[in-house]
Amino acid sequence: QVQLVEFGGGLVQAGGSLRLSCAVSGRTLYTYAMAWFRQAPGKAREFVASVSRTGINTKYADSMKARFTISRDNAKNTVFLQMNSLKPEDTAVYFCAAGIGPYSYTNSYDYGNWGQGTQVTVSS
Image (cartoon, rainbow, N blue to C red; front, top):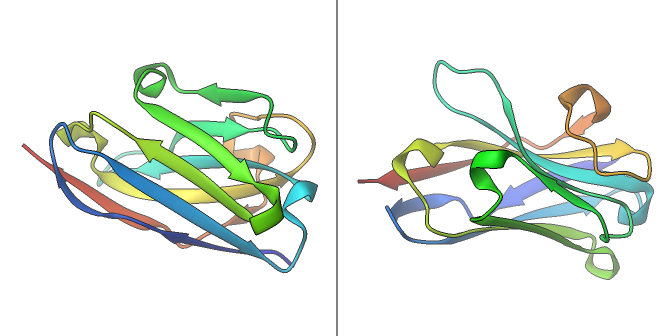
């Protein structure tokens, strides 16, 4: 069974940056496609970004494409989400997810393993 733990959330002013990390244990990271999702209060969980097993292919939600970057270090079993130019509407709990498969999937049902989430709060 794979375990995922997110790090790096916090409070930041609008226009600032944060880098989230997701530490994966229990299985080799290369086994999994990885993604970040987020959920704001009162809203459904939404896709943020995903990366294929090799790290070559990535996908982003349209509103985040120019500001966020997903990457992975398979040797260190860690996935990252670099978030720049943050906006108050980016405030949410951010979840790391792992799914069996080679591609960069965008649907939450493609991911069977989830972390507990890390809170990101962007003040105006």
